[in-house]
Length: 348
Image 1 (cartoon, rainbow, N blue to C red):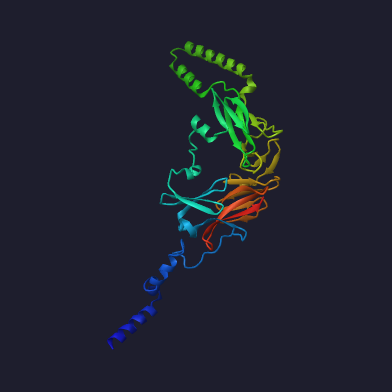
Image 2 (cartoon, one colour):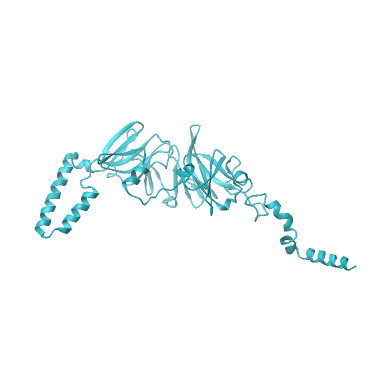
């Protein structure tokens, strides 16, 4: 009789306390099921698909297969060739996916992930400059050569703002043939002037340096050789930095071309303004111009906004790609339904 009473009390206690039931006895049943769903242990209810989701999207990286890692524990990045890197945060594990096929895990320093390693943007040394633009720019004596598609350009004393189009068939740079005073020469002159003991000695040094700079300028081709000029393989290009409102050469704005990004304007290399930007797009993380220069899109804080005011949210890593001769904006998003990184392409 006592056993019946005790059993009845236990059942009454459990039925009267559903919270205890879920966290205690029932948890012994539900936990093994949840553990078979990577990344969903804490989410009994399926999360909704993001606002940017599309039925035409393809699987870029399946997280329920080889990885078995919660999406929130991954740091995702993508290269221009479409390779995706997933880093397991808090662990030395990296996975690479291409065309939906995932390989790894790799450890730090593995050649398979070398292309994803962020270069030190603060390094302004000559070695860093040549490494950044390898194999296009090389040192030739005291000057630099540009080699592109088998053709050589130069030599130049200084090369600035070098860029290559996403299609890899065009390049542009601002290059200077002659520098009157190199950085090393300038430091030596400054040191000599500082160590001069009299005003006459300083005057003599100034005259000497002025003569040297004049000779350097004349040997290099006159004053024009000291001005930066546009160097490119694009026909009929005539962009003149001095006659324009400034700007930066950019090979990422458009897939098949190089344009100039000048604050609130996009200019082509014939010095024609092709697009004027809206205030909200100025300074955006990424900016994209369509094939016929009629519209643009900008990306900020997970949203891709088009110049016609349409917008897509909850996405990341947008980039321009070309498939079967057509240009698209491709973006990534996480699908809770498929537990996968998805990619969707919009004609652009």
